[in-house]
Image (cartoon, rainbow, N blue to C red):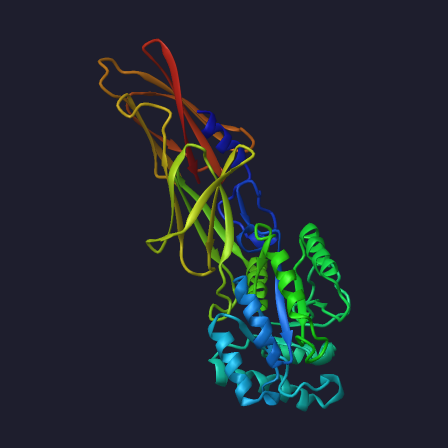
Length: 431
């Protein structure tokens, strides 16, 4: 009985529908993670200009740790033989983004020329790597203004800027994502300390690299890069290593998410995750955590009759269910096998329909007993404890007018005396 009482207390702020983006949800009940898989933060490795050394040295080191990077290239400046290196990296899951066609200072050329660089590079990349491949941009020299950012926003979902030092402000502009530029002379300790700072500040770290092994702009020693990634790998439980495009999609989807959440009965929730973003682009799964009663066993998460991978975890004596799902993919059903607090072969109680509108039917029966048993029924509004009904059932069915009850969650408490022992059980119902 204790588990169901705890469940009722924690469900006190649930509404029939709510929007996650409004940040008015009781996080003890339902939470969308700030970062994928409930990691503390994200780290993204980005590489500018398309230097071949990035693919000769950088990609194998990334692959060694099973990390994926984002490569902002200038297709108009790329040799054909270097495209082969890029194609291989792309096939392995690394992202190819745009750094303009020829790497000009976009503020120093005409608006028409700037748009041609921005749009044309995307066309060239998509033609070579596949339609809709190129979704993110990086400003050459970090040079941008409001007009340049508006041009980029016509063709890309986000753009990375270039700053000499990293700051820990929250993201305010998806077309001016801050980053940390590697410069010669930086030590492993400095690089690793920045990782520790973003973990404690829960901020997304976007690292920027150019050349490797003495070649290219601001070249990084390959061994230093390897040692740095080894340190990041040791923080696996805290860090999501995500491509630039994936982190952008996650953050935008979380920001725009709308969640319709309903309790169907004592053992079933439904959840409908939607947003107004284009599904052809925004298709990265969001990470959910939902409180479930401790009495639930063998929980299943179903979407369109397909089982979604999930797991449960107990935190501060509360049971939580974790799973990932993509917005606009259909209704999710969360079903648990409930260990009831009364014997199935002794008594049976039922309230239907659930959810209900203008009335409910309540049935109570003591099984295999020679005399009728009186059941006391109490129904209260979850959250404020307001009494909405109190009555008796004499081993039969009654109908209750609920037209005046406000929408929300209710607890129905059945209590009765059997063999000189007072017993009770509860049902959760939703209007």
